Length: 511
Image (cartoon, rainbow, N blue to C red):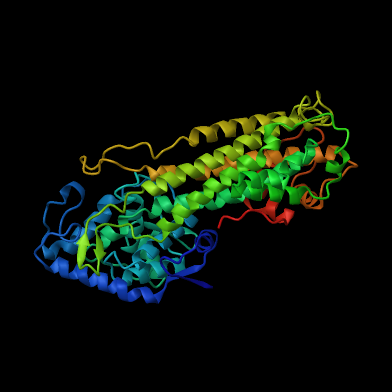
């Protein structure tokens, strides 16, 4: 198994996507060890001293004024983790948990958390051996850190709670033993270092970003196919139009669509004598809309990359200044804003895609395609209700795209009186992506069917490969048949990256 070595402040989006999409072993750069150990020595000294230091020898939250005796500091940390294991709901997907664990590793590597290197080694060992904590996905308000989900992660490190190991859900202590790992007995501040932080919210936001970007790329490919299906114009893709405006996403989207449509016989057949002056916005403005959405996702990606490389627990050990300072880096407001931005982008990509579906099934707008793209309308309904499904999913995504970061409620007896709600803001992104993938899958079905009705005229070579990839999974629609499997198979092609892979055309990249 290959090993990915991560250096805090140098971790890239590509590194994080590799963690998310594979089971690669991960290790922290050994060069981080001196700074990690220096910070830990400062915590040890504080724990032995008489001065009250939050989270080291005091209670937590509203109980921060309660001093804890030195002989009770280990019990303090253990109690903290067990009492905070209050997560509910469905478990986090395994890939998300792995990413969360890696983000915590990176945060420890900044040398401001005050943990022993043995905690780093345990997280590395759990990742390498596939000991993945069972973490309920609900319960965080995104400040003071993602307390409940991260507590479930920390509990597994202590041998408490449950984990996934070798395909089975089992007690953490049993899995650690089988994997040749030893549970940790937490030292001063180590429990707090594990659960104060934004790693749950950030992991979910990154997952939504990675999956959403793949869907956005697929949207460019499929929209080019839709353009040929309705015999749309490529004039709005003229590069000068887009350089005059200057937005990178728009320029790149138009360029990709030009390349995808290059060589289409369908396009060449109606350059002259076409009575239509303009196409509807869902065709003509695809670069402006999806390109803008991609720019927004890149802005969110920039925020999330900073957060992924950050130290976000509390208090933080400022070794050069010789201070242990209680601050607020656990507040996930930046992640909440990024998640809301991604949600808006996903919603808009789906909204304009749904209008292209509606365009293609409507004989008054589709430029001579048969109603609902069936060869025998009336007896057959064709893709009529598939379009209705996309409308339902589009509307659902519009509701899900409402901002979450503008919500707040006081917690912990008003000590934590403003929170980010980044956790569920990020968590909703996966449902939005799945909805978008289905919308795009239906658009793919409609566009391929429409292009096939244009025979003997052929689409471009790139788009013909996309249709061939679809037809390997889903046959051309003749008489009505059970449709749910067709929709699922088409959505899977979007999810798996098969649409962009078949096109084999340069597409905008995330970073």
